[in-house]
Amino acid sequence: MTRVRTPDDLLDLLDALLIDRGGVERWDALFADRPRACPFLVDDPDENLAGWVEQGLLQPGRALELGCGHGRNAVFLAAHGWDVDAVDLSAQALGWARERAAAAGVVVTSHHRSLFDLVVEPGAYDLVYDSGCLHHVAPHRRPQYLDLVRRALAPGGRFGLVCFGPDGGSGLTDAEVYQRRTLGGGLGFSDGQLRALCSDGFCVEELRPMDPSVPGRFGEGYLTVLLATRVTSG
Ligand SMILES: C[S@@+](CC[C@H](N)C(=O)[O-])C[C@H]1O[C@@H](n2cnc3c(N)ncnc32)[C@H](O)[C@@H]1O
Image (cartoon, rainbow, N blue to C red; front, top):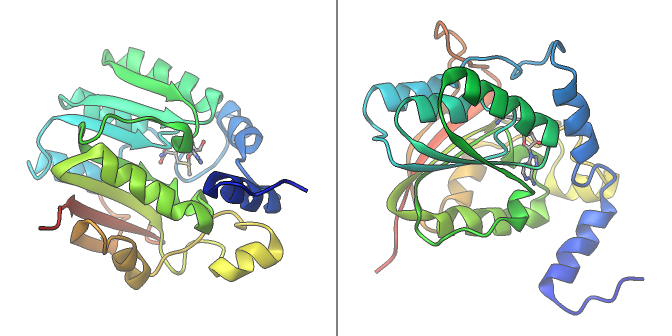
């Protein structure tokens, strides 16, 4: 049995409990099958992100996208003047994202690794964006995920998130994840859970269901949208 000497050993041990840990092969297979019918395998950016940018709520700066997939949101940001770092653990996804960026004539800096292996310059980013990645993060990794977002953001920087709402994901509780050893395709979050996640270091500005009715924009009613500002205490 693995010896637990450090907190990281414990996280690794909990990762190993889950049969869908990491999921690189699953994500690579999904992004390799480009014609596949899958809600987010579209070209359009998220309606919330496009709205925030087009309304001037988010002004161009440095953005970090976590779990960028095939790059529809990263390319949208780059085309609107952002300097974008995009992270994903799927090589297939990043290959597609690079093609998308080239076709749009924009630069997106891609990072092929797990977000948990990412080293960020503290306070370097004006925006950290995640559309559909957090709900694939196991509960024991959430504190590490939030530490990354807090560390990456400058004071006043924004955290934009799209994740499964309570009626969206697998419906599994955190305890059931470990009893069944799976996230069951992604975890749903209530508004209360999202507010609790943001209670240390963020001020929530917007929290609502995603709008599926915006023409030319991606939206699904079972997803929740959150925008929060990075605040520092004292
Ligand atoms: C549901 S897809 C969303 C893709 C993209 N954000 C979009 O909305 O089009 C989730 C993405 O997160 C990536 N991902 C999952 N866990 C990750 C991790 N630990 N580090 C980096 N990327 C991860 C997957 O490879 C996949 O591309």
